Amino acid sequence: MKNFLIGVVSPFILIPFVTIAYFALGFADTRSDVPPPAWETAIMKPAVRAAVKRSAANMSAPGAATEDSIIAGGKLYVRGCMGCHGEPGKPYAEDHANFPPIPQLPHVGTQYSEPEIYWIIKHGVRMTAMSAYGYAYKEDQLWSLAAFIRRIDKLTPEEIQTIQPQKH
Amino acid sequence: MECGGSPPLLRLPPKQPLTRAASRRLTNPPANRPTGKRVGEANVKAFLQGFAVGTLALILLSLLFLETGLVDIRADVAPSPLISRFLDIATHASVRRHAPALQSPLPLNDEQTVIAGGKLYLNDCVGCHGEPGKPSKFGATFYPPVSQLAQTPTRYSEAQIVWIATHGVRRSGMGAEGTSYSDPEYWRLAAFIRRLTQLPPNVLEAAKAPPATSTNSAQPQPDEKK
Image (cartoon, rainbow over all chains, first blue to last red; front, top):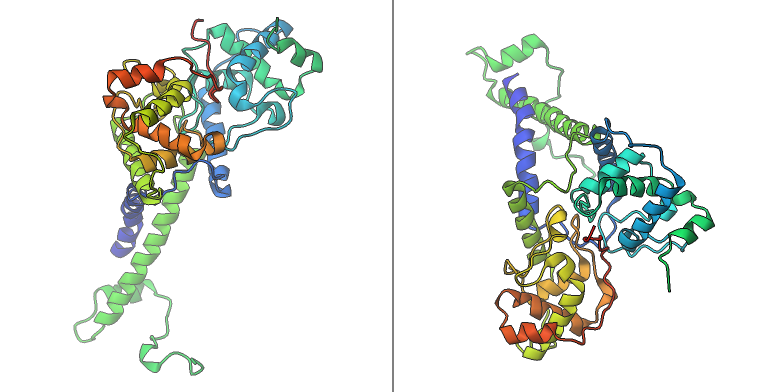
C-alpha cells in the first residue's frame, strides 16, 4: 500500500518537472507558421470557450442591438479588427501567420453571445494574438462591436456596403 | 533468430493475483522464508500501479481545470513574474535550439544597413514594439506583453531575430512575417533591432527621415483618439 501511494504521488512531482525541463531546454517549437496539432486545438478551444462562458456569465447587454448599433459596430470592425479577422464580403483570406490561427469571422461566424464577445474584446485572450482592447473603445462601442460580430456571417449586401469607409 | 522463445534465464515466475494475506506475507515475510526478491517485485508492481493511477489522475485533473473554464484567459492582467520568466526562458531556449546559425549576406555594422532596417522597423514594427523613448501602449495589451525592443536590449543574435521575424512566435502576438520581407530586408531589420537600444542619434534621425514609404502594417490600429 505504501508503495502504491508513493506511485500515486510521484507523477505529480515528476510530470511537472519533466514538462518544465522540456520547455526550459527549448524543445518546444516556437514557430507560429505551423498549424497547431489537432489534439492541442481539441483541448484549448473548449478551454477558452469554457473560460469565457464562466467569466461573462453574469453579464448582459445594456439593451437589444439596433440596426444603428450594428452598423456602428461594423464601422469600428472595418477600422480596427478587419486586418486580422477578415473583411466582410470578401473571399476567405487567412494569412496563416499566427498560432493559434485567427478566426476569420465573416466566414466562420461566432459561437459566442454578445456579452461574451464584449468580454473577449475588452480583455483579450491570453497566449494568443488577441490583445485587450478595453482601453481603446468606449463601453457603447464595445457593445456595438459585439452586436455586429455576433451577426457577422449573416450580413446583407446592403449592410456590408454601409459599413465601408466613406471615400471622397 | 529468436524462434526458441525467451532464454530460460530470463523467465520470471508465473504471476499470481495477490491476495491480501499473500501481500501481507510478502511485505512481512516470515524469517524462515527467503522471499526478498518477491517482496521487491511486489513493491515495484504496487509502485507502478500507483504511478499509472497518479498519471491518469493528473491528466484528468488538468483537463477538468481547463475544460471547466477555471483558467483566467484575460490578456489585460499582466503575467506573474514567475510565468514571465518561464515563458522568456522557454522561448529563448527554443530559438537557440531551432534557429539556424545563418551568415548575413550584408555587413551588419554598416550604417546604411542599420538605417534601412530602421525605416522598415519604424513603419511596421513600431506599433507593437515601440520606439526609443516611446514604449508602445498597444504592445502592452498583449499577454505576454510585447517586448519593448527600444527599452530592453534583445538577447537574440541577428540570425535568431531573422528566424523569429520570419516564423513568428507561437502563442503570442508575434505573427510570422514569412514572405512579407525579402532576405536582405530581414537582415537589415535584424541589424537595426540588435542595435536599437544603443543607436547613435544620427542613425535614428536618418531612419526617421522621410521619405518613409508606408507599407500597410498587418496589425489593426485601434482608434486611440477616442
